[in-house]
Every structure is written in C-alpha cells, then in structure tokens.
Length: 120
Image (tube, rainbow, N blue to C red):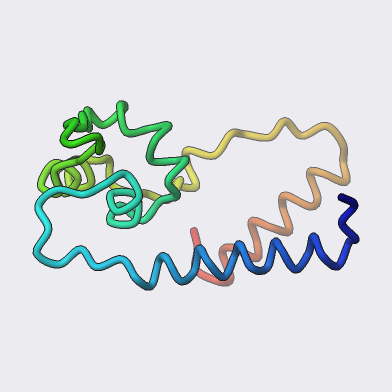
C-alpha cells in the first residue's frame, strides 16, 4: 500500500496528538508505584530517555504481575540527589588563542562592552 506525503504527515500529527492526550491523562496522585511511562512523566523526561538512563541513578524496577514498576519515593530521591544545574562561569570558559589582529580587536571590544554593562 502506497501512502502519500499528506497521509504520512496526517499520521504523524495523529501520533503527536495521541502522545499529548496520554500526557494529559497521566494521574500520579495517590500512587506509590509507577510504570515506566508514568515514571518518565514524573521525572519530566521521555520514556526512551528514562529507560536508557534509569540505571545511572540506581533506579531498579520491580517486576510485578508482568509490569515493570518503579517506587515513586526512589524517583524523588534520584531527582533530589542529582547534581544541581549550574551555569558555566566566565572563568571556566576555555581561553581563546588570539591568532590575528582582528580577533584581538574583537576581544578588546567585547571586554569594553562587558565592562560598560557591569558584567566584569
């Protein structure tokens, strides 16, 4: 069966809408154990990202009645214990080797700009 380009884009749109509906329908209140889909939603990541990296955070699922379940408390602890998000500081940026007079002048202008704006 040959599908046209409009059929493919329509199928992609339907798939995206189904995913959005699934996200809206996730209700985690009162649950202590979550499926992989629910756990990924709770953690704010995609299911594929969750499945690929859960072991890095020692998130070991339990097998119960054919389902892979994660303890909600363990997910919370993994998030809470994760390294805090930080912005790279100006001093940690790699230094640029000045290779030309034009580059030297551009860096000097940037320094003057930063000084005027109070960034340094």
